[in-house]
Image (cartoon, rainbow, N blue to C red):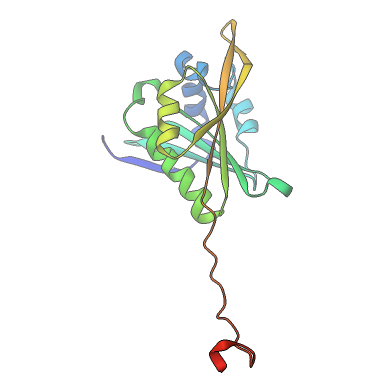
Length: 181
């Protein structure tokens, strides 16, 4: 693979992302709809303290994106992820690089306990990718979305981090303890 760079999305990336999401194969595996303008995409991917949008760039060309949405209140320990890769670049490690960056953000910068996603049940490459990163299928949403003239099912998948190891303060000895006798 040529030079692969994962970086924060900027406004100048919207035209290329709109072109990627216009590809029928990409569109079919996301919740996007055809004929979305760059302005509509800008509103969807707009700047927010709860949304971190990344892009994957190969030789200076944006070839994919991934997003981490941070939930709030009683679900502040949770993030949701979504991603898409240009059909000409699928199967070349772009999704893996994006997911690694999203998981790094979730684990090492936001200290999230749980990361969730939905994936169509027929998206076998996506499901394999998510499983490699520790996601497990938690359930199936029947007739989850209508796409390309038919209903499609989706899996709900999540990745839970292990419970943190807590360090206990040294025991305070008192005069009644065996250690002082």
